[in-house]
Amino acid sequence: MERYQNFSCSIDSIGSLQSISAAATITSPPASASRATPTTAPIAVAPIGTLANAGEPRIGMTSVEVKAIWGEPVETDQDEPKEGRVEIWRYADGRSVQFNNKHRVLAVQR
Image 1 (tube, rainbow, N blue to C red):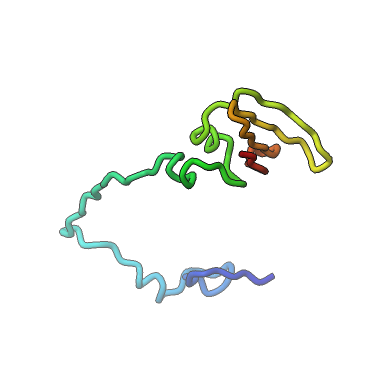
Image 2 (cartoon, helix red, strand yellow; image 1 turned 90 degrees about the vertical axis):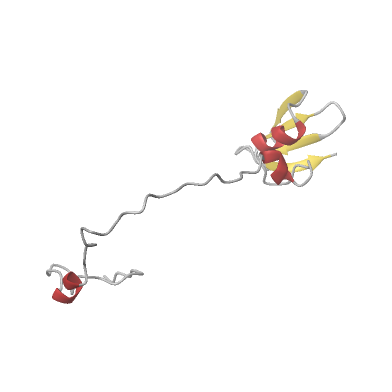
């Protein structure tokens, strides 16, 4: 059985001890070395609606993303065409969104 890895191995073969050259390369910093305190900086996180391309749901979006864009639907229905069960969200202005069983957008009707 062969094994592959993307880093060097410090053991010459399975079941043997660590090679001298690999053990010699392991060093620890001197005691006098100062340890830098890690600093943190805030990162900007875009709200879900910003990621949605100007307020239009797209195929593959989650139901959470659609709610962030269009809000709560006025009506929800379940249907089971031959392709599998879908959930349909209908909005007051005639728009609708179909979701698959994993709550991902299948179709958008405007």
